[in-house]
Amino acid sequence: MSEQAQDRKPATRRVLWPQLVLLLGLLAYVGAAHAIQRVWDLGPRPVGTLPALALVLVPAAIWLVYFYLLDRYEPEPTHYVLSMFLLGALVAAPIASWVINDLFTVEAWIGVTPFSGERIAASFLVVGAAQELCKYVVVRYTVYLSDEFDEPADGIVYSTATGIGFATALNLRYVSSGVLLTVGALNVTISTLAHACFAGVVGYALGLAKFTPRGGPRQLRLALGLLCAIGLNGTFFLLQDLVVRPGMDLRPWRGLLLSGLFALAVFGVISLLMRRTLRASPAREG
Amino acid sequence: MPATTEHRQRDEGIGGVLRRGDLLVPALGLLILCGGWLVRSGQIDRTTERRFDGGLSLRAPASWISLPAARGRLVLTDVVVPDTFKPRISVADERLPAGFQPAELRGYVELNLQRRLELFHLVAAKQTKLAGRRAVRLDYAYAVNPGARADDPAATDVPVAVRASTLAVLVGERLLRVQVKQSVAQHRAEPGLADAVLGSVRLEARR
Image: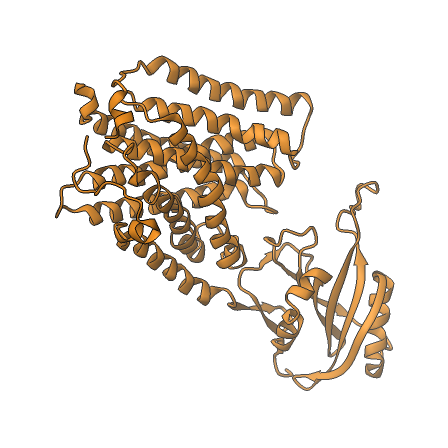
């Protein structure tokens, strides 16, 4: 632990109420988007730069604070968490997008039939692998090496911040291409949560691996974490695809419901993992 | 908690970071991506055979879907192209007018296109044969407004220049036409599409 980290007293925070308020804030955000769409009778359209930023940054900020508050015993430095958010948005997301769209030209060969063989293969072997590998590399070769990464729970905190930044960059592109406001707001909220949680799975593995004794199953834990995240990401891509595929007879609500339920289930798992790592946190006794 | 297995971060540069960097895990990710590349290689140029009622078949990109079309027509398109004008392959079957002379085939097809298409411009024309039947291939350009709608005359869009090729085959008293059309930008990006599709057209032997 760094001197700076040692100087900070472990601060147990009350998190239930603030988190409830944040979740209500998310509902208010989606409600506001729905009201704007109804009042101005807006159809699907490209959103201008400032409204697009607001549309993607509001849920990103809410989820960022939510996950930050989960680390209740020894909060991480906010500038580290924000840096990981920026690395996710400005490094991991552009690289993953380049790999998926320009190198693999995924849209050109996966066809449009939902759950077809090539679509499933692309979801796991290309989209899931590229996105989760980029998030992993960003966390593993930056904050993981720092002295601030000093307990297993930190892996989840930093990785979720990276995932939220990653989702923010993808969502900015999505809403700029033209969306129905309510569908866009819901999809942005869900995909931000989903990417945060997938990265959280890798983060959990990174947290465990960093404190695995020498000779322990360190590489195995990391590999399993990455594989799980790729599996979850690929499944989510298949479900979310029913919402965002352009030029087709879409039923966005069905896709939103499926991807939303899936993201909530992963969110539940991440919350349990976080609770588990916090129970073992040395800062808890401090 | 002190790190039990990690050395303290020292200023060793990127080489030092990578040496201690669990490179097997990124290697696993890259291996999975290699699997994705193999799947892509098998799919990217994959074509499937599409059959038409008149005994005609052709090979089209596997990812293209069939659109609802009037009876006697087949329309395939690539819906994932982000442009407003989607590339298309269409097959149509029409009865020829009474008194039609086979020698007039090229003129008949060209006149038909000229009547229907805005700013029609013929690029090339070639007489050919398909399964022993008289045929003609025309390459041409025209302009289309992708936003135009019959039910809403006010609906409009910026016109798009289209490159198209039509292969017309005489089958008894009927004319089978296969048309491949792309916007000029799409044609520049994939100039061999029309040749590949029209070159794959097969017709059942005379019955």
